[in-house]
Image (cartoon, rainbow, N blue to C red; front, side, top):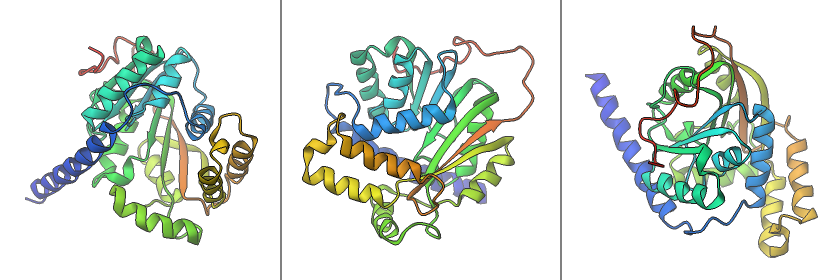
Length: 283
């Protein structure tokens, strides 16, 4: 009986999240406009932490309506897949991939993070950004991330940092944002590391980011639009200050990069054909 109640509850939360993001992604522009500064910075940071190379198979769980990680990865020559609970997001990002020239190596699948439609050990590099905090049963999602990760593959998980460590201005901002976007929890880095270890995921790096300097950066960019230009020295200087504080736990978000330590299954590396999703949105 308890399991049945939990499943019903999960579906209600999932439906609420899906409706929220369907509405949000429907407002995105029809034309691909490139990457804003913060997306460029994010791609550089996580691709460096994951050590992404063209020979990888990359998965972004919860790719969103811009799909910038999958598009950037595909443009770099890596076979890349993005999943999202929002069908609108998947359709939108498929169009962006076609417009940017990334579609031959990029694929998008409408699926839940708690039930990924891929074989075991399918991906060598996996991203889960701003996903776990939305799920009632985040353990199921962690199980799935570990399941589809190949041996010695890397899994990067980014979540809201624990309120215990977050700087007060950021904590106040998060109290408002949690209700707005449906966050169910925050995470201590130590808890995330231990939960990964129980799933054969060994933590190899912990990074705290989005410190108070990001508020300063956002305000300056709002007042002086030129700061949002990709060539702006001011924006990138402030971004570097935030990245240099990666060991300071007062940041708004925490990212843990894991390596899958399980023994490789028989049969060797997985081919692109073998990991093709069951519901490819490009078809």
